[in-house]
Image 1 (cartoon, rainbow, N blue to C red):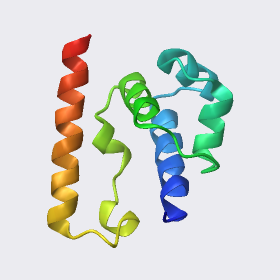
Image 2: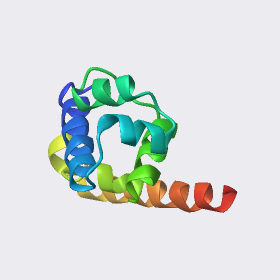
Image 3: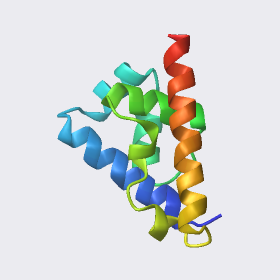
Length: 101
């Protein structure tokens, strides 16, 4: 796995959290995830599950695919078409989880 992905993902989560004016503790409360785990994610020390990313995105009021702004840089092994298919899959997952609520 590309070691750059968790680091860049963590930076993006931190940026979005700060834009929303939230502390790690507040994001943890809103997402149901430990603030310690939020910190580990932001530092790129862990690989969060899809469920954790969905919870974080929901707490930030964004779609999961917005956590990955620079897809081509993070996933150079994927073509543009592959990335578009992955984004479509994430949108479908977002819709599916939204219907469960």
